[in-house]
Image (cartoon, rainbow, N blue to C red; front, side, top):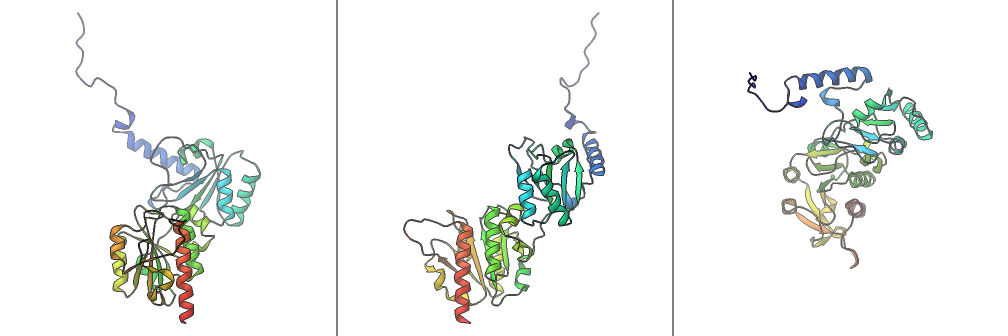
Length: 309
């Protein structure tokens, strides 16, 4: 007599679908953190990409929140040479060449903690990026509030706001120009915009340590708040009817809004500006890189202020 087949699911559940999976993963992470010294609190969570696919090259590994990981021997030593703030340097057991030794020396001189880790642990930290046995952890940047920029020195005030600038290197270059021409700080949107990463630190040549970057949940609302505080909002855009060198309002409290290369300012931001201004250019150039355009505009504003003082 044949046995009756029991009723039930026709397939085996995957591990992640079982009730015990989450607790087991949490326990493993805690055990790993204890072994390697990697913090697991909410404020210092590792930044790793959401995709589980292996990375094809070395460089920066990042996500929306938490510390950033710089991976690979060349990127790590370059980051340390540039003086980028770091919270830990992880070196794989047995890894040793000129770049690794220089990275260890630079980290030691800067007071960055050195932690030894195995290949398996580094693979897990970097989501299997090609780390070459060395990983630098860069702490999460602490953004200022938009209102904080008005409390800093600089008379008259100058705030540089970015709309649609997504390359961290452009952000770093703009911060460097802001430091050179006396801006109070730089304002960036919370979404769809470049943030302060290792790349931004490197391009800023260390000026991010003295020029604050603020984040706005809503850029239009932040610009209107600045207008209410008495600042004139000028948008740098190819559609502008006035050259930046002829901007009369440059002598007073000012917000300079810089859009992305090609797209320029978004419609709502452009409509919020008190005036659209441009950089006069020859017929052979259609647009400028956002970092270059912002630097030229800040120079013109600074020159006009010096002439009026």
